Image 1: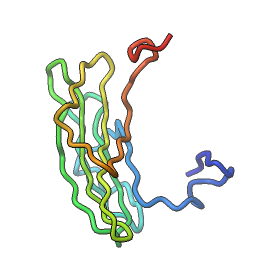
Image 2: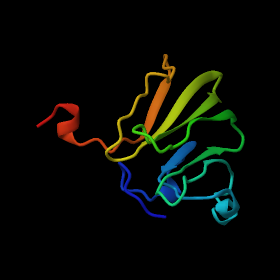
Image 3: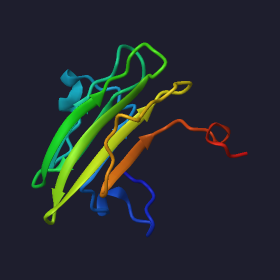
Length: 133
């Protein structure tokens, strides 16, 4: 896999401790076809035929706890949220991976955020929707 990095390296040369793939569109029976060697994989499976699902990988030697917070539904709030607790160098990090479906009306007020909380994801936010022109 080759992807841009600040120093022009490929992803294979960049150390990744944790990664998240939004719109993964993976079901549990297909997870075996994604061999990320050295990583523990966690999955929020895709919802029906809609492009959704979140795949999270974390280095195997790292203590972690994975929890599905919210699955995609049929209402106005068609978002997905998974939470990962990671302990690294005696520090606790909270990582929230979020997929916000286009034309959705997200409500993330239920997500606990504190110090050392990281929010990553695909918010499908366009400049006009966040007050930018």
